[in-house]
Amino acid sequence: MDELQQELEGIMYAWSRYMGKGGSVKGYPTQVSYMASSGSQSSDEFYDEVQHSLGLTVDAIIQGLDDGQRMAINHCYLKCKWLYNINEYALSLNSALESIRKSAITKGIL
Image 1: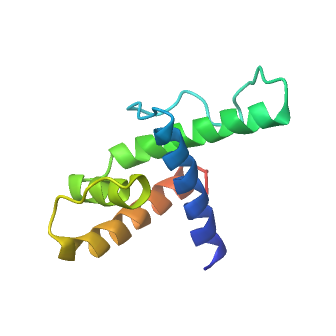
Image 2: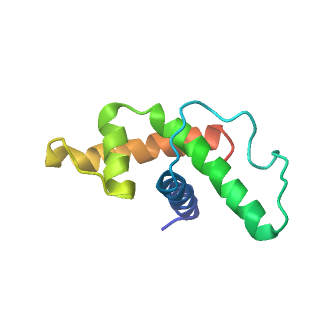
């Protein structure tokens, strides 16, 4: 697996953790994670804040995908039920990950 793919998996993991903690706020955050001020007392708390901000940003990107791509991401990373033709899953997932990768590069998180 190349370095870019590993980084993509890292942000998708941050997103799935964010969603698991009740995330999914539409829209883009007002600050990027590396510029956000933190009231953290420890590096672990700061790490959690950065991961939350990253999850929020990735969620905003995912909200911009078409329905099939979004469902493929939800099926793969959140274990949601796949409601479309099973033969379309791999294509939808690959195109969704490519769109996320391009947006993440544009937004400076990859």
